Amino acid sequence: MQTYDLANGSLRELNATLHAQNDTTNQTSWEIVNPRGAHAIACGLDSPIEVAIHGSTGYYSAGMNQQATVNIKGSAGPGVAENMMSGKVVIDGDASQYAGATGNGGLLVIKGNASSRCGISMKGINIVVHGNIGHMSAFMAQSGNLVVCGDAGDALGDSCYEASIFVRGSVKSLGADCEEKEMRPEHMEILRELLLQGECDAKPAEFKRFGSARTLYNFNVDNAY
Amino acid sequence: MLITMTDRGPDSAGIAIYNHVTDKKGKITVQSDAPDTDFNSLESELEKQVKGDVNLRIQSTHAVLELRADQMNSARTILKQLRPNLRVMSTGESLEIYKEVGLPKDVAARFDIKKMSGSHGIGHTRMATESAVTTMGAHPFNTGSDQCLVHNGSLSNHNSLRRKLRRDGVHIQTENDTEVGAAYLTWKMQNGSSLGEALESSLDDLDGFFTFVVGTKDGFGVVRDPIACKPAVMAETDHFVAFGSEYRALVNLPGIEQARVWEPEPATVYFWKH
Image (cartoon, rainbow over all chains, first blue to last red):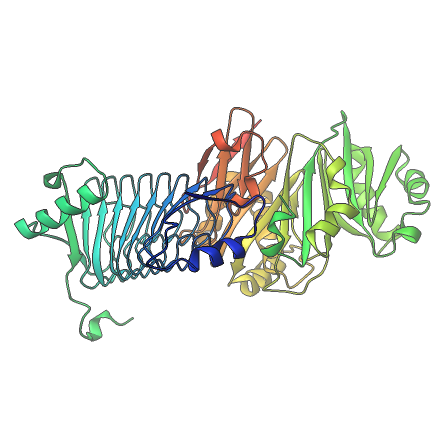
C-alpha cells in the first residue's frame, strides 16, 4: 500500500504518480491523506488501481476516470467523477453540483446526498445515490441509469433522451418532456444489479421509473417561444 | 480564508468586521487615495464642525471615525465638504468595512486583518467581470447602517435596474453590478421591507447569477438564485457558523472535521443570529 500526504507533497506530483501506473503495476492500492478540499485530486486515472482519499475534496476529483476505483472518505466538491469512462467512484459523504456530469461509463456511488445537476448530460454512466438529489438532475441525460434512494428536486430529467431514472422517494417536479414510465421486469433487473453494486439495501419494487416522453425529438413549432 | 481564495479572486479583497460597540456611538469608515493629507487634522476639524467628540483610528488607506450616534448624519454631510475625495466604506454602530485592490494577502497585510477581532465578519476576494478593478468595485458593499453585502456571480439586469433606482433618487456611484444589488436592497428597506423581505424580493427582481451573503449587526444571511450555479458551502458546529465558496476555504477552522457541512438550497433565504 502506498500513502501520499498532500500536506507535504504537491497535487501535480500526486496525479503524475498515479498516471504513471499501468495495467501491470504492483502498486495497486493508494491512500491519499490531507486532501483538505484540494481540486482535481486523482483526475485522469487510467489503470486498475484503488485509490482511497481520506477527507473531503474540492472541484473535479476523480474526473475522467478509466478503470480505477476511487473512494472519497468524506464529501466531494463540484464536478466529482465528471466524464468518467469506466471504473468506480464511491463517495462516503455528500457530493456537490453536477456529480457524474457527462459520464460515458463506470459506476458512481454517492452514499450521502447529491446537490443540483447530478448526472447532467450523462452518456452511459450509472449513478447510485443513497440520499436525495438536487434540482435539474439528469438534465439532457442521454443514456445510463440514475438511481435515487431518497427524493429528487425540481425539474428532474429535463429534456432527457434515453437515460433511465429510478427514484424511491418523492419527485418535487419533472422537467420538460420527462414522464413516469412503466417498470418492467428488465428494469427491475437493472435496478436490482445497480443497488447491489452500489451497496444499497433498498428494494427495487419501491422505486418508480422516469424517462423521456420523446416529444422533443423532432421539431415542433408549438414548442417555440 | 481570504488567502486560500486568492485563485478565485485575485484582483481585490475586502472584509466587513463587526466589533467595538460603544453605547450611543456610531462609526463611519472612510477610505482615501491620499491618506496622509486627507486624515491629517481631520479629527479636530470634524470635532469643531459637529460640536462633539470624534475619535479617528487610521488603518492604512482607511480610517474609522467614532462619534455620537445622533451626529452621524450631520458628520457625513460635513465630511463631504471637508474632504470631498473621501469615500465612505461603511456606517453603523458595529460595522467597519476595509477593502482595496490587490492580492488578498497584500490587502490582509495592509489592514492587519490578523489582529482584528469581533463577533462576526465577512471577507471577499474579487475577480472582476462586470466593471473595473477599483476600491469602490471591491466587496463588501454597505447597504445600510451595520449592513453589508458580498456577491459571487454577475447580475445581467444591473443597467436597467440602476436607471430605475436612480430615477427614484438612489445614489449609485459606479458601473458595478453588485453596487446595484446593494442599492436595491437598501432601497427596498427604505421603503419598508425587512432585510429578509428585501432578499426574498431580490429573487424576483434581480436577473443573473448570485450567491449573496449579507452581514447584519447580530448575524448574517445567505441567499442563492434559483439556478444556484454559484457555489456555497456552510459549516456549523456548536461554536460557529461559517460560509465559504468552497470547502477549501473552511479547512483551517477549528473542529471542521466534526462540523455539519452542507450546501444552502437555491432560492431560499437563511439567517443566523448570535
